[in-house]
Amino acid sequence: MIETIPELTTVLQEGTLTDPQAAAALGVGLAALGAGYAERGIGAAAVGAMAEDEDLFVNGLILTVLPETIVILALVVVFLV
Amino acid sequence: MSTSGTSNPEYVNARVRARRAALFSDEEYRKLVRMSPAEIARRMEETEYETEINALGSRHSGVDLIEYALNRNLAKHFDDLLGFSEGQIYDLIARYLRKFDAWNAKTIIRGLYVGTTREEIETDLILAGEFNDRMIQRLLEAQTIEDVVTILQGTIFGAGLGAAYADYEETGLLVPLENAIDRAFYEHLLGDLPRSEPVQLYREFLVAEIDFRNARNALRLARSGADLDPAAYYIDGGELFRPSELNMLVQSPDELVTHLRESKYARDLSAVLDDLETADSLIAFERGLEKALLAYSKRLGNVYPMSVCPVVAYILAKEREVENIRAIARGREAGLSQSEIEEELVIL
Image 1 (cartoon, helix red, strand yellow):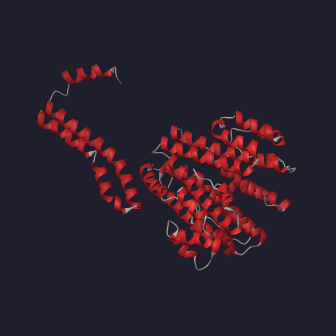
Image 2 (cartoon, chains in turn brown, cyan):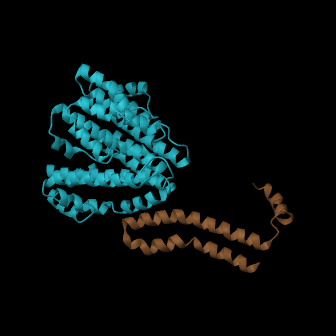
Image 3 (cartoon, chains in turn yellow, purple):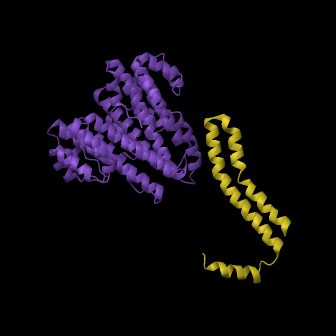
C-alpha cells in the first residue's frame, strides 16, 4: 500500500487525472461515499434506540446526519479549484 | 430473521443497550429482599413486568404469578432479539437461545411421560427459543413421545433423538432422550463458528460456560458421595476437563480445587476457591462461578461493542435477574432471613 503511493502520485501528476476540477469532483464523491457508509451504521443504531424509546428521535436524527459534515467540508474544495 | 444476508449488529446493539438499562439495579434488589411476595408482584407491576403481571394476575397469585410473569417477560425479550436480528448475528444469538428449545422439548417429553395435562405443560414452557408458535402447538398436541420425536425431525434435535428413541423403547427411561437433546444443543453451540476476533471470544465464553458447568457437576458429585458415573454428566466441548480426568477428580474434592487453581480461570475464581476451602459452602462457589461468567461477558461486551458480545452479556444478565427475583420471592415465601436470601443472589 505505502510503496505504491509514489507511483500513484506520478500517475496523478503525469497521467490521466490532470484536470483539477475532475479531481475535486472525485474527492467530493468519495467523501459522500464515506459519509453514506458511516450513516448506515449510525442510522441503524438510531432507529434501534428510537424503537425502544421515542424520546430519542431528536438525538438520533442529529447523530445520524453528523457524518454529512464531511461532505460539506469536501465541497469547499470544489470552490477552491 | 434468517441466517443469510447482511448482519445488523448496530440495530441489535442499540436495542439491547436500552433493554439492559431497564434491568434491576442492586438497590432495587435490596428493596425487594425486604418485601413479601405480594409486594414484590406489586412492585414488578410498576416496572418492565407490567404487561405480564396484568395478563397473568387473574389466573395466578403469589409466587406463581411472579414466576410465570418472569418467564413470560424473559421469553418476550429473547423472542424480540431473534425477531430483529439478521444474518450472522442471528445465527450467533440463536445458538445460545436454543437452550430454551431444548428445555421446552424436554418439558414436553417429560410431561407426556408422567401424563400431565396439556395446560400444565404449556404454563411451564419458556417460549424464548427458535421454535415458532406453530411448532410449539404441534408439539403440545402430540399424544405420544413418538409423535414428539417425529415432529422434532428436521430440527437440530432430530438426528440424535431418532437413535435415542430406540434406547428409550428398550429401557423405558427418559435419560437417553434428554441426553440426546442436550448433546444436540451443545454440539450446535460450538459447531462451525465463523472466524473473526469477537466471535472467537464469544466461543471462549461458551467454552467457559461449559467448563463451569462441568466443574459444578463434578463438585456436586464429589460432595454428594453418590455412586454415579461422572462421564454420564460430562458435557463435551469444554477445555478444562477431559472425561478421564473428571472421573479421577470426582474422587477427591481437594484435587479438583487444585485443578481449578491451575487452570486459566484461576484469576477469576481465586476468591471463590478460597471461600470454598475455608467456609466449605457449595452455594457460594456456584454463585461465584455465575458471577465470574457474568463479569466476563460484561467485559467482552465493553471490549467489542459492535459484535454479538454485548447481546450475550444482556442475555446472561436478564437470565440472572429472573433467577434473582425468583430466588427472592421463593425465599420470602419459605421464610428465609434476609442474609440467607442475599447469599442466593448473583449481583454484579
